[in-house]
Length: 146
Image 1: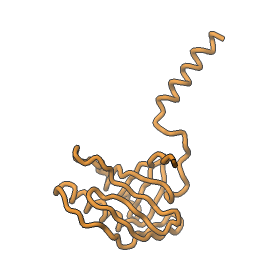
Image 2: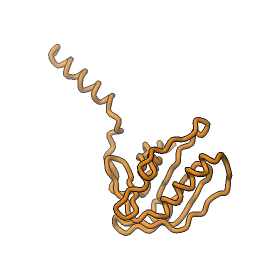
Image 3: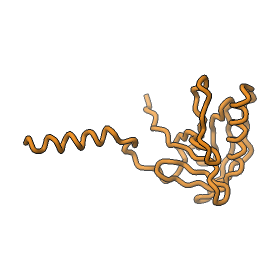
Image 4: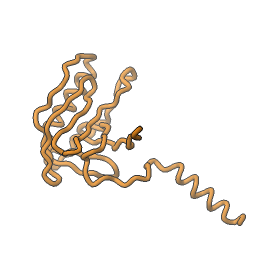
């Protein structure tokens, strides 16, 4: 029994060090929340006083998307055709703010309108314009229903 204890502890510690939740990557982005990680290959960094991440979520029907773009919420229609994706015009609230956040918001929403395809790789949603990745999102952990 003593010889199994080190093995058990090693397995336990390896499981604690894992960055994944143990859930498999989804086959589709629909029905999941996604946090923006990069735009055009540049990591998204938010000012310290802005604790709210930039997000994207597709409606369960796959026909709509909602999100937060740094200052404003948005919603719009989507059209999925296999791994092809097109966003319709986005309706947004019109809140202003610091120039840095407004510039980030403009880059994000402009990139969304350029999207033509999607792929999920290692629990990341990659939205591309042609063959060029323009937005990369991290999958959000599932929310507990109460």
